[in-house]
Image (tube, rainbow, N blue to C red):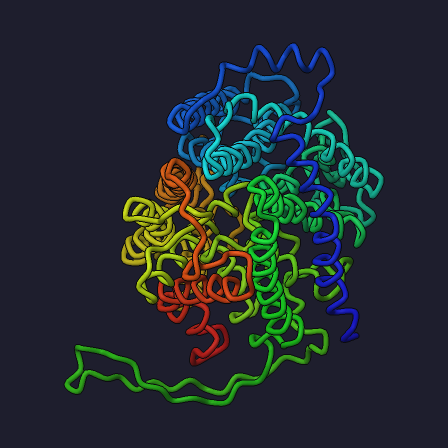
Length: 608
């Protein structure tokens, strides 16, 4: 049993690492324009190519394109009731829900304040969902390519529209087609049909009609295999169904689960090596890759140990406790409380915490997926994240807080570059030497831009979290009081800021259709707040880091000397690892103590 638990996570790490090397060569071949396109492709590329762009022109094109994408996506959802492929007559989502959904998919976040099988027609799933799965992923990868060209002092950082074409047509379409065939063979539907009605084995399981006849079960269908493949490859994460990759149509078997998980890992792994290859510094790329791999292995081991190898604390016996809490209304400022003993339930837990898990994938699959999906900012889930043991839940949160453990397409390596610059700067200051990266001096402007990119993330998590925790917007939305409620809100804003998309699903954030008589009471505030967080957290770091790379790349190279810090050694790897851990701990350790840590050590199971 012990071997089986650890076989899946380490088989995934090994497979993704092996695939990353040939895939990274292919990515460099495409992004450096060394391929020879077919005549029809060449004709189209020439008409897309508006000429070489500097970094300002490239970013302007990226932002204008995203603005147009937002408008297009909003119109698709707003016109859903009048579009084809909607035989079930799905109506209009609430305007705030449309705003949040469009911001979510446009930014490669895919937080879902709706359930796809309940609220979206197949027209919306195709022309809004699948379209954004391809395009939003391509935007991040294109931004990384521009940053690399800036660092290597190319005369131009490329052309945004040509880069987008290359990524979508030559990378995503062929690879997504292969994975879609795998998912189709494993049992995922692939059809334009919206639903079928079937008789249940247990008559009347779905209720009875007014005539006393058993109601049939309505099973939602659609182009699931195509949706699923790009959802995972693009580290998008938004599910065709509300249950995401725990749904048997999105993820039918243990084998499909392996390929689902592998799909979200291969591009983030390969892009780190692409970074090293395009810079002509493969050893440097390998050092960064190893640091990321160690961090990822750590999050997986933590998650599996505290969830798969530990019982659910809500089901075991707890002794009576007496504890003291602060209460300023009392003379001594303290209140003594007693919690009675809690009897355990007769549940065998030798397989660990099985709440919210899909056993067809194996006992450790849920905890492994939970760690990986935030490490690569995917956000898909194959188990209920809200049901993770409290300490196990720290692992996916750490993946979102650090936001650089491989990360999503392009932006993961962009975020890691912030830590690279800050680590080199700190090391340079400690030895009294001007820090250098790739032979270029790191000065005040570059450090300021790296710090801006770094601080955007914690500020857009902690500031709105404090506001919602202190008001009815958050207090009325949580499904559990105390520390777990803090964890629910913390996870939601962490997911939004990290462009991740997963969630603790006990949080009431769904408004649903515009004519819904009973929406979640605070859904509009959550829609707007997380939508804005997603937009700012997506684009501000990209702008800051591409600008930083352009300024750094424009400088003259300095000669290599005895005091120069090499970036292709184990010493640099240790420095980078330490910078990530120390900075991450300084930014997020206090809120971790208030959330999952307090929940674990609370007076009653799950913090009370």
